[in-house]
Structure formats: C-alpha cells, structure tokens
Length: 111
Image 1: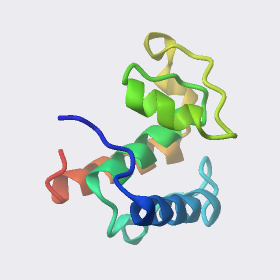
Image 2: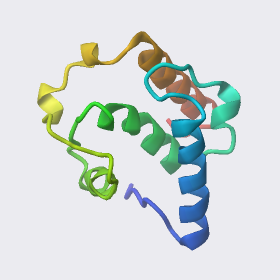
Image 3: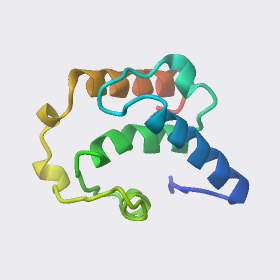
C-alpha cells in the first residue's frame, strides 16, 4: 500500500492543526497523550504521530515518504540511522504514547 502524506489542501490544514495540538498542547516528551487526543485521526495521521516521537530524537526513516515528510519540517534533524536507533532513548511517557497510538490504530482497524 502506498502511503500518501496529504491528498489535498483541506487534509493538509487539518493534519497540521491536529499535530500542532498534539505537539504543543502537551509537551511531546513529558506528557501522556489521552485517547481523546487521537480521536478522529486517520491511518496516515496516526502513522505520522507515532513516527514523530522517533523523529524528535533524530531517527531517520527507511520509508522514503516518511523521510521526506520529516525532512520538510524545520525542527527535524535526522542524524540517526534507523538500524542504529536505540529505543532506550525514549522516555517512559513516550513509550506509553506509542502504545496508546498503536492501541488506537488497532481499535480503528488501521493495524
């Protein structure tokens, strides 16, 4: 299945707004997401939200479309090869947030 970051301008605006909410209403590294924070996110949006946790630690991505997406963000500094990234870099809260996103993806039939 091909991953499409955004299919149109409306999706782009919505996605930007949702991720801005997740990113700035809750400190990405220190605050737990709530299930209500994820409600309404599409499969692609969940994938981006999940991978942004890694991207904020400088992880690069094997998937070219994900890599292009994060390369387009001014905050992103991808310096760690995916095979060299150590999950121990993630905080307990980030791991919990990943679990919550994956649980939501399963509930929604995205995974």
